[in-house]
Length: 363
Ligand SMILES: Nc1ncnc2c1ncn2[C@@H]1O[C@H](COP(=O)(O)O)[C@@H](O)[C@H]1OP(=O)(O)O
Ligand SMILES: [Mg+2]
Ligand SMILES: [Mg+2]
Ligand SMILES: [Mg+2]
Image (cartoon, rainbow, N blue to C red; front, side, top):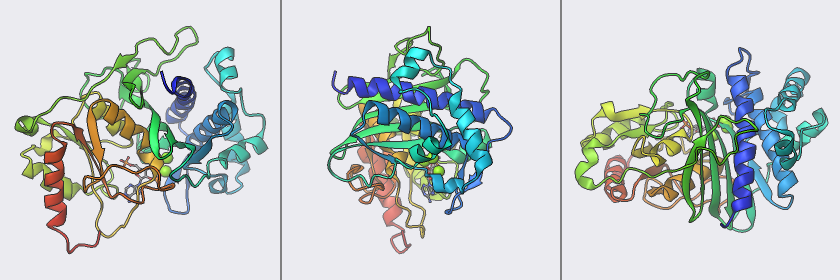
């Protein structure tokens, strides 16, 4: 199977990092800092990024990396740096698995230099890994959903995508969660993955060295929805109204005769994983007027491939494919609309009708 080695590595490194973030999630102190753009970052984000970059440098030394965080956000904070080092030094993987990932991080200076190895500018050619060590940091801090996201992009196309979603139910048939998860519940925690042309899968996040990662793997599919049954669809969107316009999504739902009670708000790329396994149907991310926000590739690459491989279509709000070959951001796209193949056209028509009806608004 093409990209088999890359997928196996991505699954293991995302597992190790997600288990680290879970330890921070359940701890009372998360070492939260505010970045220059005022968004939050925690020792969980830094720890997960350093571990994943370290393993990628070990296994694929010639590949470029684009990652969200950088060491300057730590603002030379020695207390937090040493907390992160102790966090990355404790592992629940076996010695063999640790060896596959290149082992642990030696000291603070290695930790800081690894954090800064995700500064590639990307572009239309070559291999680049896109990493979001914690997507949905606000959800992570609120006790809600978050995801550890890693994708391999080659010549602008996503070839491998893995999402670690520690707070989603393991069961593919469980409904979209609407309340805070119980992190101690053994039926919580799932990994989603896909390779281009190889389909999409889910598997348990719970990991012990005696339980290989091939245990519990299931192929996942979106619901096959047709225009006639759109009113039965469930849609999901960001919790944060600053990230996706809630008023536009309500207007679109009304046009499609989808009751608003069928909307679920959750943080992070857990939305992509949820619709890919049929625990929801449509993901709407609608530009907020006046913001001019350009989406980052690490917020979408893995989810885009997982949904497409599960039988969905992912475009921006104008119906254009997401273009991952334009650098660190999705410079050619605005918003995201992900839906099953059978209804994506109808959903885009409604999205355009609502957004174009407000053309006078700066967006
Ligand atoms: N104005 C914005 N519009 C859309 N997405 C945003 C905006 N500001 C931040 N984000 C990003 O949205 C992602 C979370 O999405 P969701 O709300 O669906 O969970 C985060 O990665 C966050 O980036 P950041 O890391 O800078 O906070
Ligand atoms: Mg993110
Ligand atoms: Mg993040
Ligand atoms: Mg962030």
